Amino acid sequence: MKKLMLALACFMPLTVSADDHAPMPPAIAVVYECTLNEGVAAADLVAFGRSDVKTFVANNDLTINSYLWEAIAVNDPYREADVRWVNYFPTWDDYWVNSAAFGSKGAPLVGKFNSMVTCEKEVILGAQNLMSDLVVADQKPFVASVCQLNDGKTMADAMTFSKKFIAMAGEVVNAEVGGTVFSPVLGISGFDYVATYYGETSEMTKLMNGVRDRSMPAAMMKAGMQPVADCVNDLHMSHMMVQQSQ
Image (cartoon, rainbow, N blue to C red):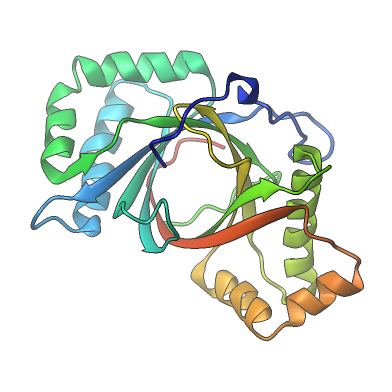
């Protein structure tokens, strides 16, 4: 996600509740869009994250979660990247502590990373988990809906719609999936939000088949769920590398 200007009014706009009780502030998601260098596979980058990076994080008592999103079917203008390396931080304090650590003691790791991939500058988004618990798996399909709100609709409407969609997936096709909504913060604009849905492969298969055989759209229509945004859907495989906490 690149070549886009920042809208400061979007600075951390997500303040909804993750479980309808306690308000949960958004995490900070730092995304690096990368192309794999010659001879390097996504699996090599995942192995590097799960070994070298994970060990460095543990040895330096850093607070960070890291995932690699391997692009499978992605629409323009974001289809150029082979992978997206995504770091999550609970607070800006954690962001700056990690930046300092990787910029000094972690410089050899950064060098190894740069030998494997060629990346754009980082972009930063607010990441709001829609469920009280994350879906944690070493590998999981990851559908991202890149959306522009319809006239008169708000981010609160988008959150409500996404949470209802996840609940309906459980009711209609018995799929246990999670969801996160990302919103532009720094270094990126051009869309209002990205709603993501993910889970174990077997669970996402249920959801995707439910869309394919029209059982999910039919249930949504029956429930009176109207689209709140114009969206295009992308597919990644998400690989967990460093997972410390929710």
